[in-house]
Length: 202
Ligand SMILES: C[S@@+](CC[C@H](N)C(=O)[O-])C[C@H]1O[C@@H](n2cnc3c(N)ncnc32)[C@H](O)[C@@H]1O
Image 1 (cartoon, rainbow, N blue to C red):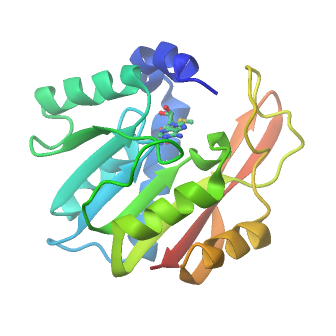
Image 2: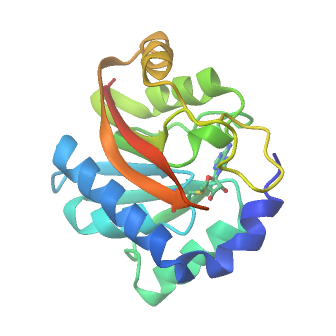
């Protein structure tokens, strides 16, 4: 999938209260599941408008916001200028399916509602492993396996994830101590779609 869909949604993304509250729920689940300290270097991958990091930024030292959509990156840059995101936050144009892995190291990688859009999951999970220090944490919030009805636009990604299959993929990418828990749900056209939080240690 190209970036046109998210480019076109970026300016209005935060006007949807459900998206804002879901990101807050994901951030709360992350904060309850992994250590956040004054020295934590956080990378949010597929950060969109940076909503999840907005809720975590006061509890970490450093935030890098990565997304392959120019529209989303523009919104995040505006938020940094406005002070909604930390002044020191950096915005990266990064697609781990396509780009070399940046030569930086993080304590925590968070990705929310992104991986079902990714085709080459092993490449992206291996990229996360390379970006984390040994002992660093990965947090993945995403859809549980669904019947394909979730997306009403041109979509060629995953119809959610089977938690056991994702665990196997994480172990293959070099992660350990994989845990999953219910995180939130998304109500769409009368159907509730489950969202899990998976955590793993590099
Ligand atoms: C459903 S949105 C979620 C945005 C944000 N994480 C949130 O929870 O509000 C998915 C985001 O992932 C980004 N994305 C999709 N595929 C990507 C890829 N291969 N590399 C980087 N970002 C990607 C999109 O541009 C979009 O901003």
